[in-house]
Image 1 (tube, helix red, strand yellow):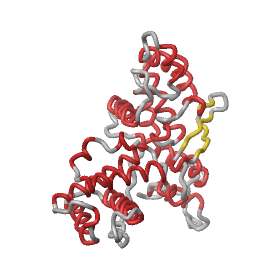
Image 2: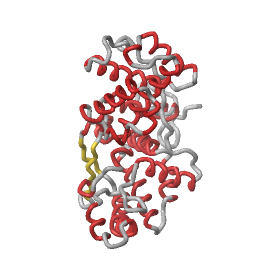
Image 3: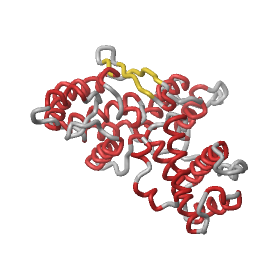
Image 4: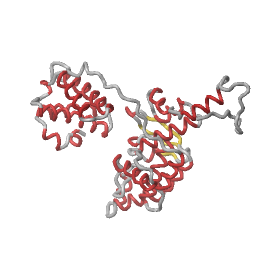
Length: 338
């Protein structure tokens, strides 16, 4: 793990900083059990501070004090970084310097008093149902990669899963007969979520035709049979290797370009399915369980009903929303001016 994540970029750091970064990577990957993508994010955050400090003549973590860290965070703000980035960097600094103190690398924890920057309420883009349909149909085709991409997109929308949960999914995590998939979320927590007919049909086509062809092409030669047996990931590349997060994101982006939808990410689908379920009357706690949120407050981000929807619900449900003499429209609802 460490050898893969602490790459050649870390070689530009001083030995003291490089050792400190390695300690963080080992801690986050081993003791905290975070996924590779998360570990890589911690590493990038730590290396950015280390390089910045080096330009300021600070060659080792023991020279860092609270003023240095505040100066660093101020630089992020001046450089136009989002508040979410600054908040994540602050979290990294807290974990890192607390670790360095415990390991005796530093004698104080300069990050202990850092306040997390307040984040504005940011809601990702939500696709309309017809836009989701266009996105899914844009991934249609008969080539093995097309079958894979359609199955991937259908599964993302059906389950509301994170892309980091879908890519490592093994074959035994899919039960097409029961229309269920098993996902491993943050902190290694597993959950079983339902998927509908469309996702099942797309997965069945891919698993029956597309995946075997991709594995056969990727493992062509004397070792083809063993290659087929070794790769257990549901989603694989044209070379027969497990599909990575970056390639999966590109599959979503490629379908979005074909559909003329602009910038769409896997999280766009996750956000969209949560919104669509809530708009159609799903219980908030049911959506929380589907998405794997530890806190209900996180799921509540998806309850952003439009003003028109909120007005319709209020008019239909509130006992004093309509005066006795006020007529309803043809649907039985009271007409409301925009």
